[in-house]
Amino acid sequence: MLKVFTCLVIALALLALLHPSFARKGRGKGKSLKRLKIKKVCLNKKDLGQVLSIVSAVDLTVRYTHGKIGLLQLEAKHLKKANKILMKRLAEMDTKLTKISRMIRKAVRKEKPKSLTVCEGKKATLTCKRGRKIKIVKANYGRLNKRVCKRKNVSNTKCKAAKSMTVVRKACDRKTSCVLHANNGVYGDPCKGTDKYLVVKFKCES
Image (cartoon, rainbow, N blue to C red):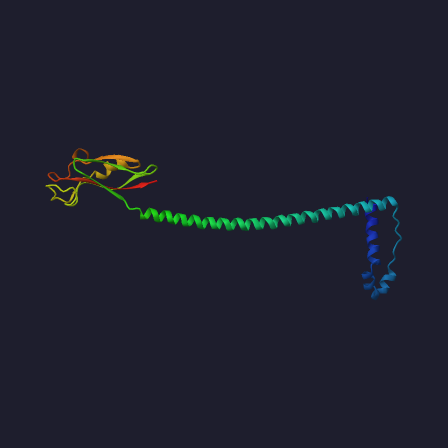
C-alpha cells in the first residue's frame, strides 16, 4: 500500500511539472528546471488498478458528501421557512388571546352586583344560572333608610346586625341557589322596636 501511495505522489508531482501553468511559471527559472532530475517511474497494471480504485472511491465519497450537504441545506431552508410561519401564527394567536383576555376582564368589571331585599318576617331565594356560583359582596340585616319595607317603626336608620355577612356567606357562597330568612332568630335583634329588612348584594361567577 505504501508503494502505491508513493507512486501516486510521484505521478501527481510529474503531472504538476508537466502542467502548462507550471511550465509558464518556470520559464523564468530555467536553471532550476535544468538542475531538477526526474526519475523514471514505472507503474505495473496491478498498482495502476489500485490507484484508480482509490481515486474512484474518493470521487464517489466526495460526490456523496456533496449530495448530502445539498440535502441538508435544502432541509435547513425548509425548516427556516416553517419556523418563520410558525412564529408568525404564534404571534397572531398571542394577539387574539390578549384581546380575549381584555374583553373578559372588561366584562367582569362591568358586571355590577345584583341586589336582593327581604322584609322582616319574610324569606326569599337567591339564585344564579346553571354553571355559575353565588358570591356574596355585601349583606346587612337591620335598617339603613326609611324607604325600604315601609312600616310604622322606621326612624332608626343606623341599624346593622354584626353577623349579617357571616350568616349570609355561610348560607349562600359558592352555591347555585340558597334560601334567606329575614328575622331576629337568624341574625339577632340589632335595634329593638325598629322594623328591619335584609339586603344582600351578590354576583354570579363561573
